[in-house]
Image (cartoon, rainbow, N blue to C red; front, side, top):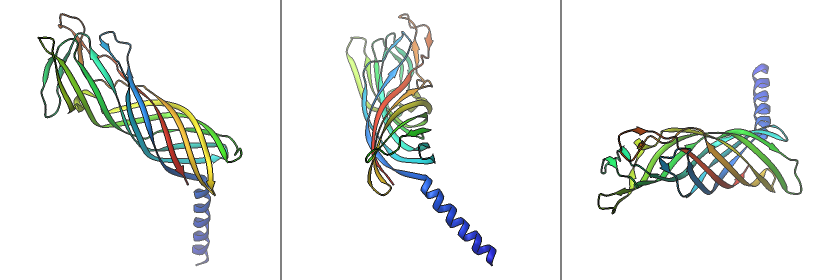
Length: 238
């Protein structure tokens, strides 16, 4: 019986210590994203304004160092213009384009579920503020890919289809590296406001569309397209 009581007290004490070392909260904020490539057979033009929201979780190793993770929803996107055209663009429940003529383009509206993981270095509290820097990796899963297709016609007019599902044209998995920083403002006790600005650079090819290499439209390639974003998080930590 005494051993059981000792174990219970030990678990309570461990739980209290663990709770003091873990902080978490909720956030929301705007996102600016764009696509980039080193290919000359596509043109990536324009930026996409979106948003992100989710939950943060910090495992505080010391007063000035933490492992940071969480889960978040990201609305990202970008534009791809096909200089020589594209092959086999197959929207779900819409027109299948065996061939997209030169000058056609797709504007992507992408929804991702992300689980960032990184390291966070913090200053001591200065007034009511604690400043921090963080860096790490962000795995992403594409949960929906919508797009607007501007298909160039033989008479040089453009046929537009908006908000069509393009899940086959975008890779399911992506991963990026992130770096940024921010500040935490103490409200009361352990409750803090957080402001965080992060840049995420893509590492994997998100493009699954075959693109024509030349004007003769007799050879294809799949150019590497990287998805990048800058996003702001505004939230509350407990």
